[in-house]
Amino acid sequence: MAGVGKWSILGFQVFKLKTIKKAGIMACLLALVLMSGWIGGQAQAAEEVVVSVFTRETCRHCQAEKEFLHNLQQELPAMQVKYYDLAELDNENLFKEITDFYGITKGTPLTLVRGQLISGFDKPETTGALLRDAIKGDGVAALGFEQIKNGGAKVGGLGTDSVVCDEIEGCSIDNPLLVTIPIIGNTVDVGKFSLVGLSLVLGLIDGFNPCAMWVLVMFLLLLVQIGDRRKMWQFAGLFVLAQAIMYYLILMVWFAVWDFVALDRIVTPLIGWLALGSGVYFLYKFKTFKPVCSVTSFEQQQKVETRATALVSKPMTMAVALGVIGLALSVNIFEFACSVGIPQAFTKILELNSLGWLKTQGLVIAYMLMYMLDDIIVFGLALWSFEKIGLTHKYSKWTTLIGGILMILLGLTMLLKPEWLVV
Image (cartoon, rainbow, N blue to C red; front, side, top):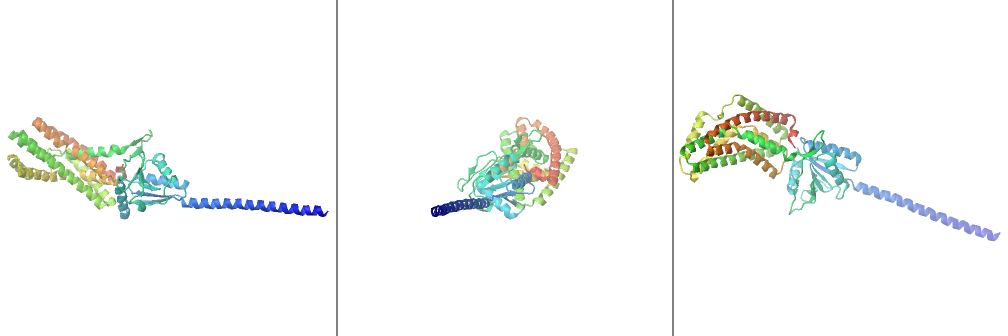
């Protein structure tokens, strides 16, 4: 009996040791589970992603991205969104620093997520998918615009390859401006033709007015009477070139004024009223059309004609060339008054779109090519047959009508829906 009791006690002790061992193992497992949950929670808390976005009030693409990010926050509560409104001067300066450094077109929205800059927003299925992948991807989660203004970010965009930007090489991106056609559902890049088309149309309308045309025609008439075709090339060619350079500088001054003023809420409506008034004036000019300049008086025209006659009677020298250039510059003042409203509206539309320097220059050149088209046509007709010049007056009349209608539409758009002018 004593032996049985001994074995019973020993068995109980073994059982007790096994129980303690199992309990210890369970406790360790439970601790590991709790610790892994805590570590996971810490990792999740550390992975809160900050999305920074440059926006402006008149940008419809910005509104579309805001709506998308708001909905995405319901799905990803750890995501934080910080908006930088360009109406605030500090934000505008920061925006210019970043776009200049990375060589990005000055367009909105511009989004920073995990060190990646994404320009523009189309729709949730395209740019939205790109943003979602960037948020869930690799990279520093809490980078803001202030931290990457001097480097440290890469540039990516819809339909383009991501490029690492550094201080030496810089980088550029050709961001498509995509919109979806209703009903059909196809996505097209309107940025390739809409502003270009507007530049060509406004330039053509601005160029076909009688204010500088009568001076060129008079110049050519005097040269035809002299019968010197070489002089015609020299004098008229120099006149046309000087006129183009002068008007280009006028456009650049207007564009610089809009960028300097930066008072969109005040300036845009003012230009809208100016465009509207110009449209009504052009319609009046169409109704009472006369193939003469209504800005200069008869006495002023006689003075210009006297100067032109004195110039063409002399051989081409540096002094005569400067006289021709001076005449072209003075005539541009009359021409600018004759087309008031069109260059202001055109340069304001460029400023609203916040385009880069190269794109702005390209659109201005397109405008200038169409602006100078009437002078080039008259110049060519004079070399071929001077009697054909009268045809240009018919074109001038009908472009006055088209210009009036277009300026009224632009004026109403600037007053009521300025965001429509931002492609």
